[in-house]
Amino acid sequence: MATVKLKSKLLASASLKDLNIGINTQAGVIALHGTATSKAQIDPIAALAQSIETIKGLDNKSDSKIPMMP
Image (cartoon, rainbow, N blue to C red; front, side):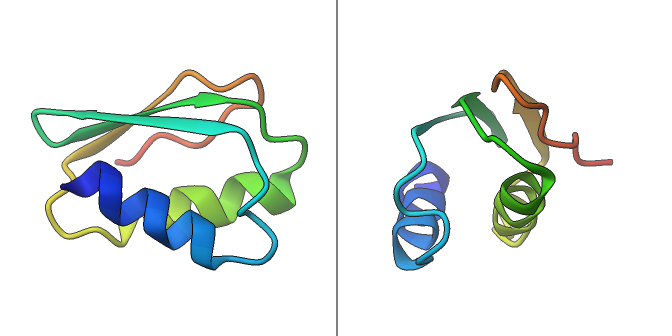
């Protein structure tokens, strides 16, 4: 369910909807993979992931690193 929520939030964002970011969720941890080209793209993706209340962590496998959740 968290994967669907995050994907919906990314698609609703004009600046993020065209990014090629894959999302998988396992045991409350979101794994992101793909390419983000700048900090201006990375920060909003991390914020959207952290805004999902059931998420316990963020595992970043993207080419440009998205900060891990504390």
